[in-house]
Amino acid sequence: MPAEAWALRIAPDGRHVAILAWEMTWGAPVRDGASCSVAGSASRTSVFVSADAGRTWQRTWRCPRGCLSIAWAGSNRLVAGAVDGQIYVGDDGGRRFRPGGRVFPTPLTSELSMLQAVGFADAKRGWASVNGVGIFRTDDGGYEWMPENSPQGAYQLAIGDLTVVDRERAVSGGPWVVAARMLPSTPAVVPARPALGPPSFTSDVLARVPGGYVDRSGVLHVVRRAVGGRAAR
Image (cartoon, rainbow, N blue to C red; front, side, top):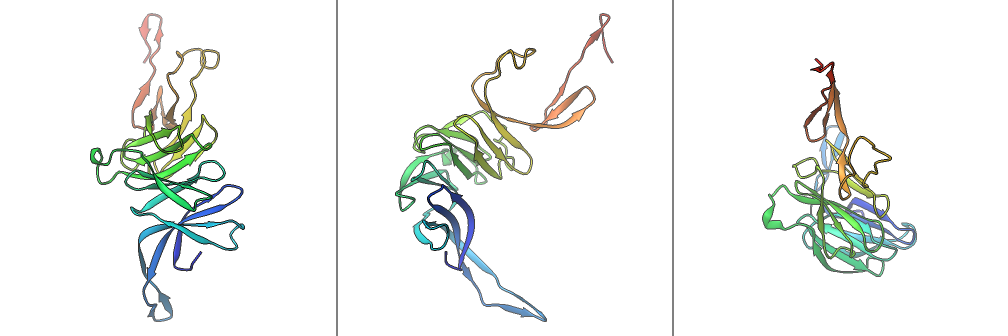
């Protein structure tokens, strides 16, 4: 990988290693007494692929809209996500890219919304985490996307990363929340609650308070019990 590239994401798959990097333009060094500094800027990202464990690198593609995420979908397909929600699918070990689907409709979101992470369990199933919009799932390798229930529709809650455990489980995290995709619970596991609906991302408890707790969305949950026919205080 050239020295002017600033690595953003690294994605190994057992056969290849892919890096998504900013292509930097650096200015001249500036001296200040005994110290020295250099400033740079970048306006686009590129994909670099290595087939020999990082010894040599080849630039295979430049993202036309600015990408923040890449992930392998199977052993030979690399998927990149642009900040505006456009997905690009690269076959032949990430050497040839073509447009995939769009994760979220850009006209319906604010300028703060951005696709920041994608992850795949195999060549078909994957998820995308979108800041200020939510979490989406694909079952066809990145061409069609559907939303899943999650607490990450608020700005800043979804800034972070996403990793996939298997075809049914994934975890997304940011500075204020870590959400895990949960499977429907059975009565044998949670006898006091009815069975849950479709799998969704559920946030952890943010804080415990006397008699209840506050969840990651800031909602207070309190349980009141009756003693001798009167409400306990």
